[in-house]
Length: 137
Image (cartoon, rainbow, N blue to C red; front, side, top):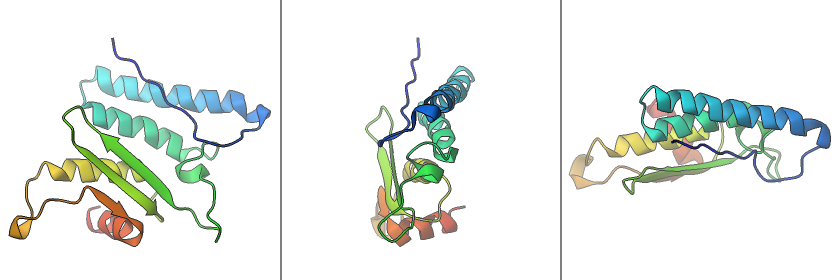
């Protein structure tokens, strides 16, 4: 039987937010479970769950991320599948859901080699990650 677990990120949370945080985590798990029951790929279900967390201002990821020293948001996200494939983004700004970007990198790897026999990117950081996101929808 499938099992899904998520967490709301690192940091200290206010006691008054705990009930809503649990609700957000439950929603993330529920949405991912629906995807799994519909027969989608596990990496897609993971992406759905983490997008819910990234969209919440209460979690320490995506929308709710802690700010950098300069007052900006830089996010990291990574994803793996059971076949040993992985993709990640780091210190990316201006991307609503970094996990979606990491998932797109993962899917892009299945397209095969790029021109001149180069392998598709597995890890992109900073402006390069944001630019790849823009160029790839």
